[in-house]
Length: 141
Image 1 (cartoon, rainbow, N blue to C red):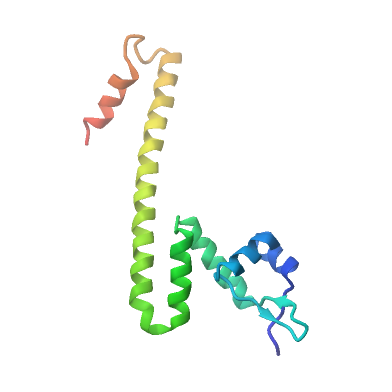
Image 2: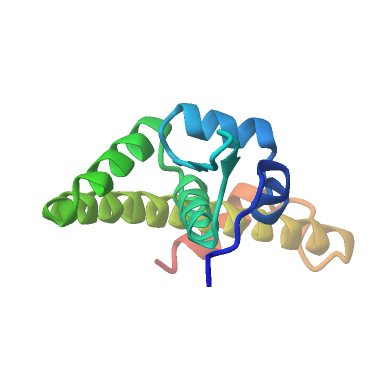
């Protein structure tokens, strides 16, 4: 049984992108749709998985040039696996650093909200600044 074929509009809905974005990805070499006998582009289930992976990479902050490089390396075959792995490891490391920074910012926001709550319910003295309140948590290491 032949793999199901999707025209660009249907495929766009399946992957959550516009047809314009799919054409842009095609122009950038990120996806390579097939063509039928009439030259009309179509996509398959394999393409759905590939676009999903590209979106994961984009979601981690991988830049377009790096995505294009990854795609070129993938097309070159298994001999490029070490280089692709190194690229993915760097993206993972960068994403983990971004997450750690965001978690720190969220912690400060939570403390600020708690500080405001303490001011409202008067469990924190009027004279206590947020800076002084925050020091209590930072001194704990």
